[in-house]
Image (cartoon, rainbow, N blue to C red):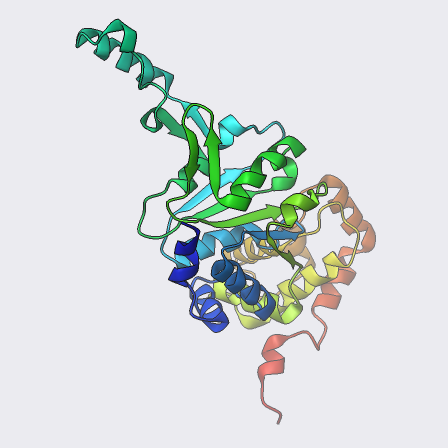
Length: 316
């Protein structure tokens, strides 16, 4: 089954990925597009690391839309075990099957012989992805793997190495189609090397000023170029300081949407103050911003040289 993924060649080229992602509102840089192309072509899982809010999870969502296939998401958390991630037995259906066999007069010695068959499994995300029978391989998103325990990481090794799962009562179940696997991590702890070795790795950083403006304009075409530049410049300034949780692209988009809803055409201190909850999510970070001097930061964001609208004008 592993050949299915390699033979299908879902993306024709790196440029094809860039174009398809752009059509879905995601501006992928060349390095990310190359890593995505190799992951899809070689049949290897993709491991994405970066600060919260830089678009790691969104990549899996966009990939599923671009390929017109199912997105299956496993949200990791402390204490996650194989039952919640892989499968559980459908005890209610098994009990009903026993009653039906008794009613049909099945020999007592053979009642329940079939209770531990695949049809009685409740598929959780990992098994669902491996046993998917759709026309195209699904995208399996294993989100925030760093929040799970090391024991769960060890359990994943069989899945990522051989795209198969062993169930004691049944045996080894192999993937119908090798899924596109995307793992994300916010680096709350280090993930074991054995897991990373099975993946292609890509670090997603905060975007450059120009790229963030482009992302914002794609996601919110109604925002004027000048305001988009001011918003992105202010965010760039904030990320230069050591906040507990620096704002990501998600906060940039939410904030710009809030400013539009309030009818703000140009950034000003009052507007930033009123919408600060869209940017910073911890009280200590808000207090630190005021200590740094909110008006001065806003004034810097409005300074010439960072206005993409002005940069786009031809020289006089």
